[in-house]
Amino acid sequence: MTYGWIGTIPEADAYYLTRSGAEDWAAFVDVKKTAALMTAYREISNSRMVSIPSPLTGEQLGKFQYAQLELALIHSLFQDGILKIKTLINHGVSSSRAMGESYGNAKDNGEDLPANILAILNDFVTGRYGYIAQGKAYRNLEDELKENQ
Image (cartoon, rainbow, N blue to C red; front, side):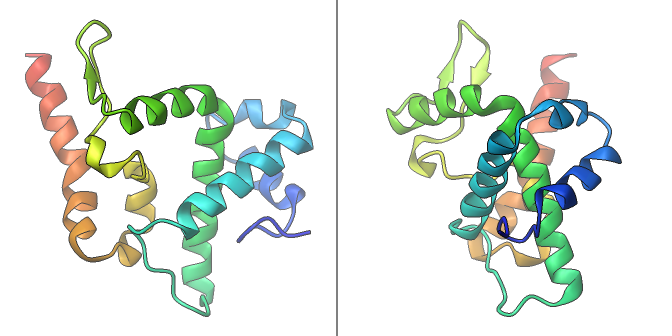
C-alpha cells in the first residue's frame, strides 16, 4: 500500500529518525501514522492553494513528499487542536481575545495550508495565494515582534 507520495510506513519512519522534534512519531501505532500521512496527502492534493504537476518529476516529487511528511507530523501531534480551530473558523470565529489567539479569516473556511508547508511547495503555489504564501509568515512575524516590544 502506498500513502500518497510516501511509499511505505518504514519510508516515513526513516525520515522522522533524522528530523528533530519528531521523537513521538516512533511511538505512534501504524494506524495513527497511516491516518496522519493520508490526511496530509488529501489536504495538500485537494488544496486550491497549490497546483500539482502531472506527472511529478524527481525533484518535484521530493518536495511533495517533504511537505506531506511535515504536514503528517503536524496532524499526528496536534490533530485535536487543528480540528477545534477549523470548527471555530467554519463557524465564523476569527479570534479569541481571552486566549490571545487569532484563527485566520473565516472566508478561508479553514482551508489554508500552514505557512511552513506553503514554503516547501512555494514553486507550486497558485495565483493570488502566491502572495499570501510568501507574505503570510513574514506578516505574522512582524505582528509578533510588535507585540513583544
